[in-house]
Image (tube, rainbow, N blue to C red; front, side, top):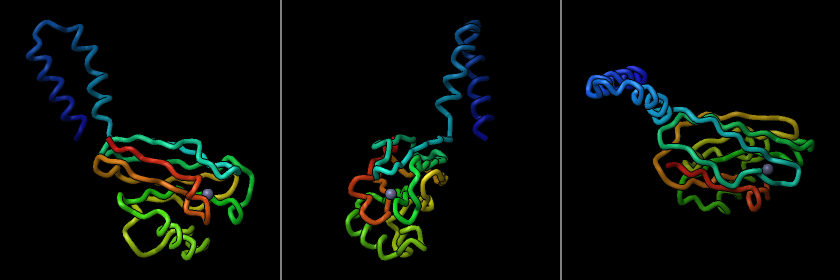
Length: 161
Ligand code: ZN
């Protein structure tokens, strides 16, 4: 669908350009880049209870693939990490309490409520997890690790442009 729209737009620009062949050829890659509808993000958590990134950026409506890597060696039960994207306005401290109550069996993800836009499973050292979601409307969205006590250090912002 996108490709056919791009092809039509490109065709129209060729028709109207009439003779500017060289510059049109250079424009095509730019058009393709702007229309990119997918984004892949990666973020790592370590044994020091830290994410390696405080900020991630995507564009509204993009199909996002986020890969969480646990670069430490400690077990999930003592140094578990997940990546949880929260809706704007969520009180993180209150959410974190609910996450603790949800327990490790639920990857520290509360079952009720609409505070979670997307989340990975909980992983231990050497493991990785992937989650796919559609980037919401433009704005700033907080992400955390919801393992008990981690959110104070393991938090950041997903910027949707
Ligand atoms: Zn963690």
